[in-house]
Length: 301
Image 1 (cartoon, rainbow, N blue to C red):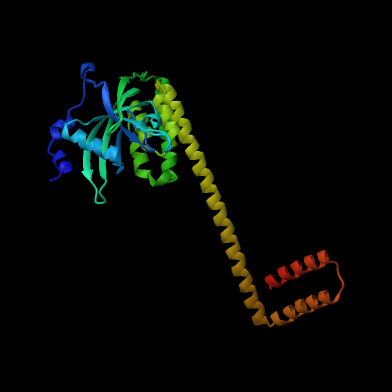
Image 2 (tube, helix red, strand yellow):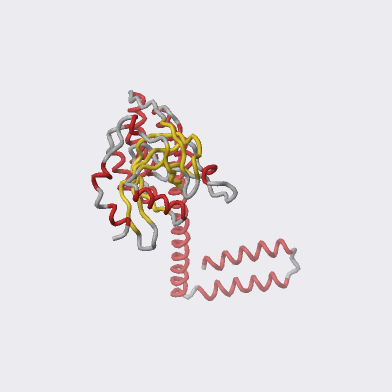
């Protein structure tokens, strides 16, 4: 059994939550997140990249029975920047709750957000980034305004589910059932595929009502895009169906005229008109317009 397999024997260690300010670490290794933002109390599944620093970090944490890391969103790749310069400086203290090997050699982990942190300074960056952190406290007071925003957010989630937003109907319906406004906000921000810069802004904001305003606007933007896309798709379908109906009716008309013996006479008349136009010295623009008209007439037969 490898180091990953042994981890699952340590269930008790995995379930021990950090409690009390005196037990909170002030120096932590950093696990950079690409295209993900972790909020407090939210759970996030990840596939750890095969880079040496990330793999080494997970192995070292396992060896020390230490499952706490600081996680932060990594800015888009820029080879000129080191990891320290790429990481947003507001992140989250996280606990790794599950680790498993994948068939392709990568590592899958599950992390849970514990506390919002500020990444203050770099301690070392070999073999992985280690930093000093401080802990941030948000104003999470739940009042009527927050409850109203939570209610409005659930309504938007229902609308997104109805429009099959990213095929996440079951996830959206489950989110609507969350009663705790704080958990609803944190889970939505972590789970839903809204733009990363908006997620990071929600994490950095320290007032709950402001966080909700930002989340609500982000979800409404997603809904507007989805509704517009749906209208465009329906309009395109209507145009295609109309063209198909016209094509079908035109061929039906041709078949009927053929049965009545009218087809050859009409087509021969059109052909005679074409020959007359060729014989006449008409201006090019006039010839072009007449040919278009005859072409339309021919299609109608």
